[in-house]
Structures are given as C-alpha cells and as structure tokens.
Amino acid sequence: MLGKNLIKEALLKKENEDRIGDIQITKEALEKAHIYAKKIRDVYGNDLECYFFLISPIAKNDRIVRDIYFPDQEVTHAAVRITEDEIVNAGEILKNNGYKILGWSHSHASFHTFHSGTDDENHIAVLNEISSDNYIEINNEREMFDLPETQIERISPGLLGRDRVIITDKNKGVSLLLDISGSFKGKVITSKLQAPIKVGFAYSLVVNADENLKPHCEVAIKEFCPLYLREKEIETYKIPIKVVPSDDYKATIDINKILDEIKDKVSEVSYLGFGYKENKRKSYRDLPFDKNLVYTKEQVEELLLMQKEELENASRNKISRILREILSASAFGGIWRVIKKWMKQESIEPPEPPKETKKKGSKRLKVVKE
Image (cartoon, rainbow, N blue to C red; front, side):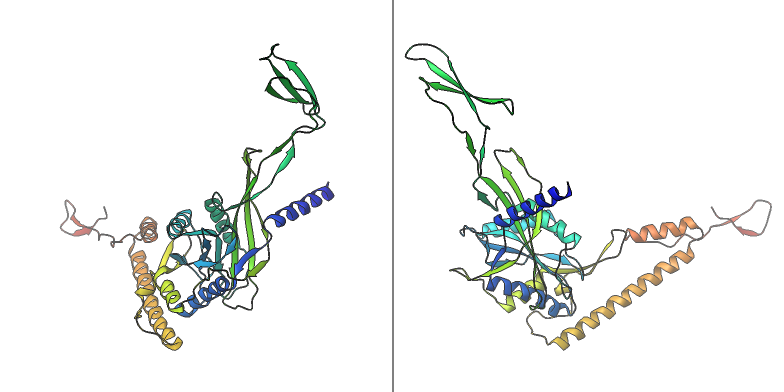
C-alpha cells in the first residue's frame, strides 16, 4: 500500500509540474522585488518584512511576471499578513489600470527564504481571490464507456421515423440514449468526452535583501473541470524560478518612487499577545523626517534613535501609571478592573476614596467603606 501511495504522489507531482513547472519572471521584475526588500530596511533602519503582488498586463496572454505592485500594508520584523479585502482592493486598482495579479511575493528581511505557516495561509488567500480569472486551460479527453455495446430501437416506422441508439457500459451499469432523426446503421466503436480543465494558479516568491540568496518559489493550484462538476482540492508545491527576457513591456525601476511608496504605504506594528496590536508608528510620515530631503544612513539611524527613546519614555510612563493604579486598588476586584481596562485601552480613573460618615451615638468620625 505504501509503495502505491508513493507512486501516486510521484505521478501527481509530475502531472502538476507539467502544468505549472516554474515561475517565469523578467529580470527587471525580479530586480525590483529585491530593491523593495533592501529599501524598506534602509528606510526604517532595521530588518522588516514587506509584501507585493506579482503582476502583468492583462493583454499578455501568458503567465510571465513582468512587474511588481506595492500595496498599503502592516509589517513586522518576522511576518506579513494579507487579508482578502486587501487582495480584492489591489485587484480592482490593478484591473482599472490594465494589470492582472499572477501571485504574491514577500521579503524575509535578513532571514533565509522559505514558507512559514503564515505564508501558506497568505498564499491560499491569494489563490482563492484570483484563480477564477488567473488560469491556464489543459486539453482533457476521457473515455465515456469501456467496450460499449450498441443497441438500436425503432421509435416509429415510416419516412419520418427515428431511431434510438442505446450505448451501454455493462461494467458501470450505465447507458447513453441518443434519439436520431432517420435511421441509424452501424455500431459505436468508441465514445469520448472532451472538456478542458481550468487550472487556477497563484505564484509565491520569497526574496531577501541579499540578492545572492536564492529565492524560494511555490505555486498553488485549484482545478475545475465541467466534466467533474466539482473543484479538486487545492495543491501547493515548490517550483524553480525562470528568468525570461523582457518583451515590449519592461518594468521601470525608479528608486525615488520606491522610497516614497515605502514611506507612504508601510505601517510598522507590534503584536503583544492576547490578540492586542500596538502601532509603533502609523507610517513613515509620523517620524521626524522631511520627505523632500535625502538623508544619509547615519542621519536616519539618529532620527530613529530619537523616536525610539520617545517611545520608550512613553512606555515607561504608561507602566508606572498602571502600577500606581494597581497599588491603589483595595482588593483583587480592583486590580482585575484595572488590568481589564488597560487591555481594552480604556481610560482608567483612580478608585474613589472612602467616604466619612458619622456613626450614631458617637462624637468620633469613623471611616466606613461602602
């Protein structure tokens, strides 16, 4: 049984590779992907991931990646996540400008290139959104009946009569009935159906700021055939990259435009646990930078250090305030109230002080907690 499964997996892999056997990308598009991976590190002064879509003009009826589209995104040091809405929005923008999405790509900062669990989820999300429009067709022909037997029944006599041809497969216990105008003479030798298979696909390309590090490439496919009347399960597998020469379309590489896109479209975030997300900075524009000036690497690092110190001071002040409020809480319930409100980022008011009341029959004032 194990041997049969291995043979089946090997045949399936060979079948898939014959269909989508590589990522075809132009030299300029691949270079542009590496530049985004480098420049996001240079802009923010540290290693951050980023993602972009692999695109080509709609008029090009092939699967060659000819350009890169950089969308709005939230990034961290170790992951990027794409939502279905982001894919749909990018698809609409690109379609209105005459482009189609062939897949997605992202950088792994200074890490090795590979697919993480999050990358797998992003890849399937992209496939589900683009596979209905992004597909190749494969000729498909299959036998309807094994060793068919032909029977002929006369429906009505005369010149206007017709014959019913019955083609039967006894092994499957099924028959095909054909009503033919006039008379039928002969025997059905074979019976075949031709129905193309649509193979929807999405590329995934993982690059690194270091161009000498080999990219990691995968493809996800989803088949649909009218003959089967159902979709097959999604399959993903690794494929090599194939750099192809540019044709009449060549991706433009404008470093200043790439820098502006990174500054305008990237938001760096930090995940603190409990599903709580903190924006370290909403965008590059929130930093003490002037977009109209060109900074040296040393100046960028100095400005980022200033911003980091401000964030650390703000964080320390926030922690001190929370600790004071916890210490001022008189019981566990009060502590839990402070923690819950902090988690929800609600404003926390200090507990009200106990009220002074005068007890009957005594001239002394006694503090009584309500």
